[in-house]
Length: 111
Image (cartoon, rainbow, N blue to C red):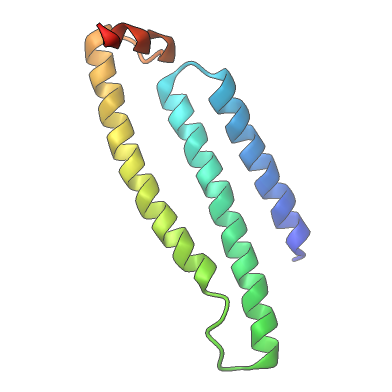
């Protein structure tokens, strides 16, 4: 499968994520859009890693080149899991204080 298909798919997913972050008011939907953007980057990293590994494999059949992108994806997934746990804790506390998950109500938490 050509790399351009992966690039177009990741571009579409990342664009949907950006549009969702900029236009939505619900905090849970905003976090889902951020996760969508992270997954688009992960997919692109794996696609480039696979392409690089295939090129290196054609030269040397015992190479380990091209797995760096997959390691980056693993670390991105760990950071995303930590971000989700902290973000959901903030959303729960926000809901307890304001009885809403609307982002516009975050200004009320200053007082």
